[in-house]
Length: 177
Ligand SMILES: CC(C)(COP(=O)(O)OP(=O)(O)OC[C@H]1O[C@@H](n2cnc3c(N)ncnc32)[C@H](O)[C@@H]1OP(=O)(O)O)[C@@H](O)C(=O)NCCC(=O)NCCS
Image (cartoon, rainbow, N blue to C red):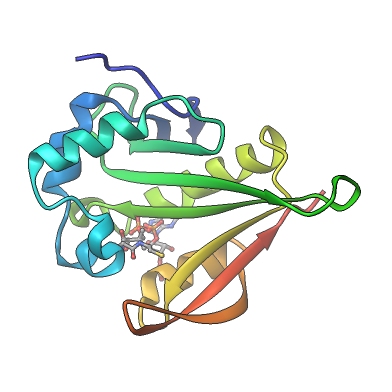
């Protein structure tokens, strides 16, 4: 087992956001409750071996994709996950540097500020260190906890879409400086 980290270590108030490890696969699999399956559909592992395969894939070093574990202390159990997929397009003098963020927190750890703190840390890092101009998220219209979270972080609706035939919106946060 390589236990290599993917994203860099980010420490916020009471939250550690660090690279996924192969040893997180079981916690990722166990956290896949109905809510996470509903939100991520086929992006949610249905077996432990699939969770392990996806975890190994996610921790491979790649410029355009990062995955983090959300923990309450360094070396502690995985309580949630954040991924960032970067995109770039347009001519060199008007280059658009964006990214798409996805996230979840295990049901037993929700409602104590883990997501808001972890996302703040990842967003700050994506703007300051990765030079992203904007970050997008896709959220279904009936996903109230996620809508509130993203709105609290400053995301605003830029488009309407559907996800698995359910109405959804694209929300965006621009770099402020
Ligand atoms: C959306 C989701 C990630 C939120 O995770 P969470 O860790 O419960 O979020 P937080 O605890 O940061 O915020 C939730 C609430 O706790 C409150 N909270 C409690 N203690 C807090 C603290 N110490 N600091 C900040 N907020 C705190 C927040 O204000 C927020 O209140 P609200 O419900 O009135 O909006 C979680 O519900 C989830 O995983 N859902 C399923 C997957 C999903 O929908 N992912 C998003 C796909 S777009």
